[in-house]
Image (tube, rainbow, N blue to C red; front, side):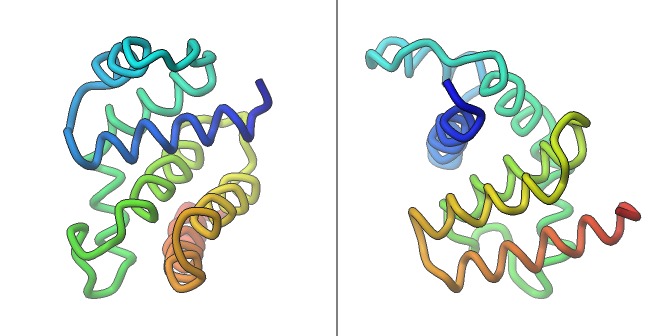
Length: 132
């Protein structure tokens, strides 16, 4: 499985998380019961990092979204942002620019150009704040 495919699987799991709030293990188990093929290690790592740090990640999204609460952000954009921020903050092997580009591609595929622009602004602010 390519990294892009793995990231898209992680996106689907985090999109589901936005509805149910299950733990990473519960999400993987539910997917397995539904007949989804086994998730690779990268998918598992990014989902676990995103869910394990969701409060910190959501606090950053809120901080840089300038007046938007988490509940106003589309679930597609939120799931993609959580992946990108987890990669930027907790997975050193992925360049930030790759995380941003992949996030924007996912959002454009499943949501709107406006959501993509919104996410790009948030991610740019987070990267600048981290000194990258």
